[in-house]
Length: 442
Ligand SMILES: [Zn+2]
Ligand SMILES: [Zn+2]
Image 1 (spheres, rainbow, N blue to C red):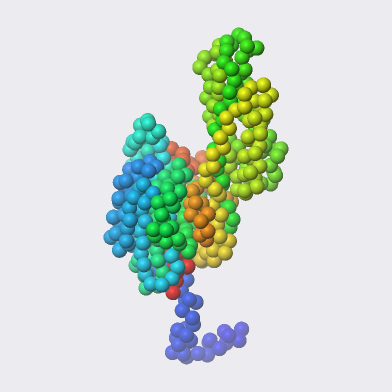
Image 2: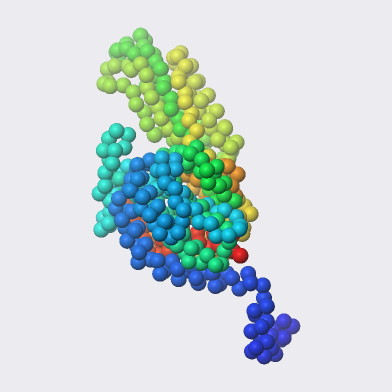
């Protein structure tokens, strides 16, 4: 109250001097927010064209040469020092702007081997070779949204370079969908030939209302392990099972029994999934085959749950075969991605920045996704990081989908996935620019 009274009696000149004498940072958030959004708005007409071009020309994991070339050219125009072909098709763009931390901003380059059915005028009709077969390709995970907002963020930060100090390390990673591109870039010297960043950020489009920014502390994606099992039997005639060992019956028992690892062994409060996605064995009805291949995926957040699920899957596979007096199966549990674990301190630092920029209801903590993402490879090198989510749909469509019986909206990887480019990309670029500015501001 006292403070207010003093303010009211200040002359205009004194009041101005008083404001100027405040520490510079106290005035920054509002001004930064306005500059960021006007920079992104100014860039939009050019960005919209780039987005639609990327959307119409998706390339598959480690084949992203056209996409990488486009991004590299744009970054060179902005004054970044660009290195291509890092980890086969990856791009590293560095911008040095005085002393300070190095901040990595990652985008993904790849699309998916699937046909887009969104009906959008700029929908992809592109095709490429996938596992030896020709396939349609589609940006159904929104990586084109991420690339475009990555370019917009780079442009905004260059425009505002008088307001921050440090080094930008913009990384365009190949092959995220096959969870192998991050590993390939690290193996090719990403953190040694260039620099190990002090902070790393990445974002992912998500079927939330556009304008929404979601984040959380701790694990925000899952550990992923692949199941590859071959149950061995002894082939024979379908009419004489006593002369054979039937791997179909063993596999069938395994598929149902393995779910007790999730329902009876895992802590029910903890997240964990075992899914069998493929069973291949046999040819016709009257032959007992001599082997059956079973493939699946294991997902978890915590290392303890992961260990429990891996152990349980293996134990039940061996036991299913032993019960039938069959040879031991070949059990391969192949590690995929680890969970992305966000830095609690960094999330707490960014939360007020996001809330200030997008509002209390639009900037919110959200549950972890059950999917996996290989951004964790960078985080696991000991880089404090935040991976956050940005919405892509009209709010009314999201509300309608949440109502019982309402029209569902397409999730990532759906052939109908159709993000609304504006303002989804603008929000993503604003959020990422503010995150970087917050750790690099002078
Ligand atoms: Zn995806
Ligand atoms: Zn993705």
